Image 1: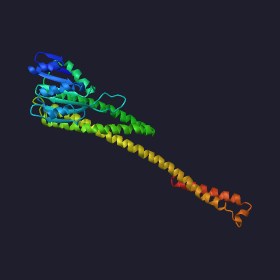
Image 2: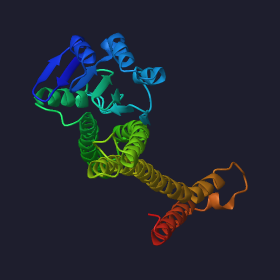
Image 3: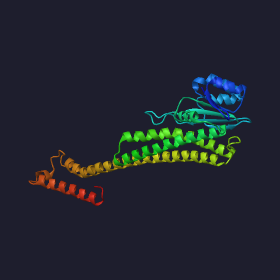
Image 4: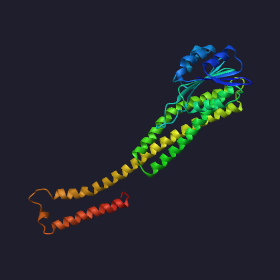
Length: 317
């Protein structure tokens, strides 16, 4: 657990003892950051701050849809932020919860991740805190910026796959596209919730420091709106790539089937002639002609060439 206390003349970083000292004499502002391993201590902190039991239950959950809830003396923000990217392009988002009062902030994160690391690093560099509402806005801005950077990388990845699919039809590339679309569908739901949260922040503000429809709130909403719109655009683009690949494969299959059909159509009359004169009847006058074999070959050649010329004329070959 990391605790920062801010007064007019001093900034101190400590642990649970620092919060207990501040709670006895609440001078200045206090910010508490706790991971999943600090759940028991964090629950005591929230109870000491008179946070509603149902709100505490939501904050301590490892999985909850993003939301923004206003209480008489504090505000609750639930978010799902970008994890560290490993071998898998899509990993489960990390649950981050914020409970914000007029002079205190409590942040609970499921485990360390990209956004949490950036937030903790910025906290260690702060020499003053203008307000916990401003810090809340900074945290949400950080999360949105990381998602935008991630989407920019995803855009380049999709562009590379699209160019590769145009050059060569490869089932492995198709599987990569399907995997991206599946993962992005899960993230889109999260982005939709976060866009709604940003819209509520824009409409209601955060305390007395971040007012409704202020430039900060508008900027935050525009970022989350862009995150969601970009994810929706990429989702449709991936769907178009899959449809295009299937259409291209179907076209190639149709061309192959058309060639096979033409070959079959050419040999049908030839097979009929060969079968006709292959019957074992005694009275078949043509069999006794001296040049009958060569005449029949000529007829078969004429029929075959004629059908080839006709198929080329109708552009089947």
